[in-house]
Length: 153
Image (tube, rainbow, N blue to C red; front, top):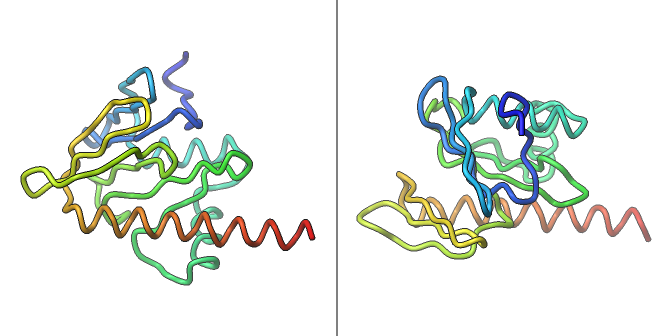
């Protein structure tokens, strides 16, 4: 795999911001360090799947009617939806895959997230904040699915 051209896929569990120049990608069976921020990975992945990050964000705003800490649909045919751990202006923002979260629990004021493949990570956010983000992403998935169903009827 060429780490300079990594694209989020259905096995991607999280894109964690390490610092201003590096991110860590957790997949079901592998982990990578990329010479990009988590936001750059999101931007590149949206572009790879045929839309800009800004376009995806605008679509989310239209569907959810909100403006803060918005999840995005990175790729719609496989329902690849990610949600941020912080506001997008925060350079410590990491991204979590909605469909790969197996469970989450509080751990010392933070949140331990376990993914479908068994890997886990501790996020610097409260369990209630994590749950709110998870619910917002689930709502996006639900509303988007309803729109698709209406189109096919």
